[in-house]
Image (cartoon, rainbow, N blue to C red; front, side):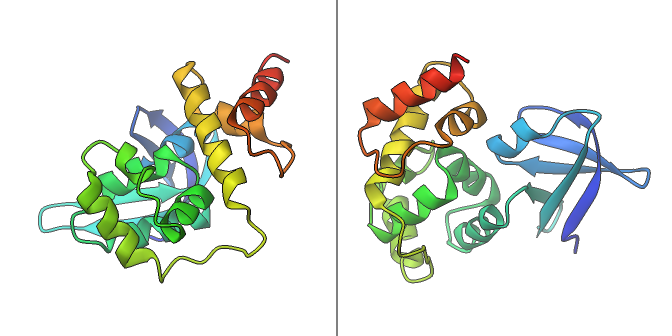
Length: 189
């Protein structure tokens, strides 16, 4: 099993990268955010989940440990494969996904193509006892930021650009409009 790779990104497309590690090119599927941070010709360190099936071995990479942890929980649910789990991680940041599961809010999960209310409810039911989040996290703040990220994505910004633009946002901001204004000011710099 491969658990970690460190090497140079030699190729990249919209769902995976090829990482050269000691002269061997590893194909690694990444989240949308992970792909945005990988630049051809630059070094990258990636935590790996090795997915083994009868006819295939696939590598799924994560730049953050929390992403890998939630990914592994998601694929442990029947009906959720690795590709669907990556799509869920593309919809919102890990903290927002955790909060949605804790609060039994399936709306974030149903944004993913191929995941309807039935599967979303199953995910919430199976993971609600396994998800932990810091006590000081305010649910409305995270959900407002997620809505702001979705609004910025609809304007043509990438997830990474939207998240970076929201960095430094006062924690008590729960109005989506205020979040978007703040982000747009940062993006206009």
